[in-house]
Image (cartoon, rainbow, N blue to C red; front, side, top):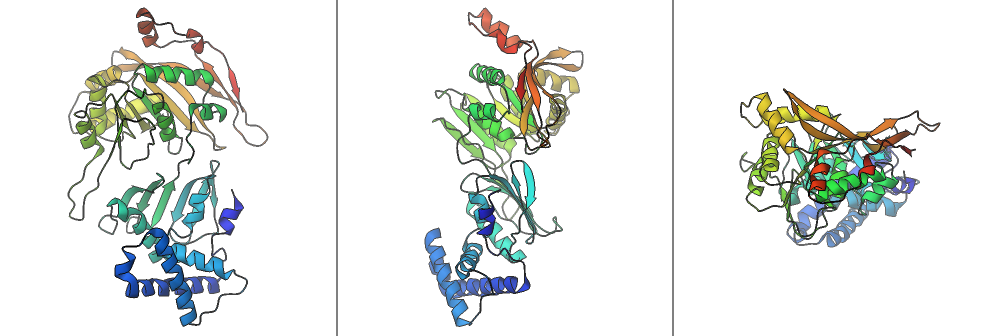
Length: 443
């Protein structure tokens, strides 16, 4: 963790005098801005608003003859109060630190971060619950979202694409809980995944072939395993000539092709109306002449519509899902299909799954924070009432080193997927040595 990011974010001292001073000035500055500048503030840019807020903070300190606590930098305290009044407060330096991948606010008094896969508590805090709620409102309001006791959960995003989830009382007993999943500012490529030990060269080559030849792919894994990152990188292999439609709860995918249509769900309004779900968008996307449909995550009845799309001419579709293994994902997929509200027999659902899905990529996050592709399997048909799968690549874990880092081996399983034969029969020359039982050491 970059310690300077935390040291610059005031207040770092949790003594009573500092908290009281910070709280009092913050409240007075907001009152000053609200009373005298309300109509003008709405027309200001964020930079102009910061300048105006800084003037207000200095003015209320002088007018009320407030004394700074001892051993603090007055300029840093003023900047901190301004950030909390019109910006994102103590979150600003954390968002600027590229080594931090997740920010977790558990009420006004606790801020945690994830750095290199490990969770750490910071010395930072919000001035009050009201201050934290003000910042939450500042995040969600520009997106047309709202949060209050009648609608106490919301998904949103920041301008840089970072994913935001908020849950507040009465559902949260610790006060407002804010979780921000940051995404790297630099574009990740498949080569970065190879360098990081997420997958092997042979795996990467194989997945590129799968995307190019329009295989339907599921990225499966637990929370924080990097499913969205993998999805973004796989989408880079889609040819520029194709029309791509992406569908998400809150837009996170950052595709770099020219012909991309991005769709995002809409929550209910204050009257409880106007909700547009992922399922609604998947249905609508079928009328938009897509070459590829990419759903950020299947978690409900939209799974049935996704399977239908994959089975009716929309090959090469991509999506993600939460599961601890490919077999677990298929079991969850059956449940999600039933959530669509149709009383379908299990064997009919499994026939749809076998017909639609070609490849499942399984991601795992290990104790040292590393993320690896631990299995790539082909959905290989159906025998009786059982879906058959054939593993193509696997990761075999070995003993941890003296620093606790997870070591292991990537290897092919000696099996080429069935579609290889179809491609070869059409005259294509493919490299079957990608699947030989070999081992690539990762540490």
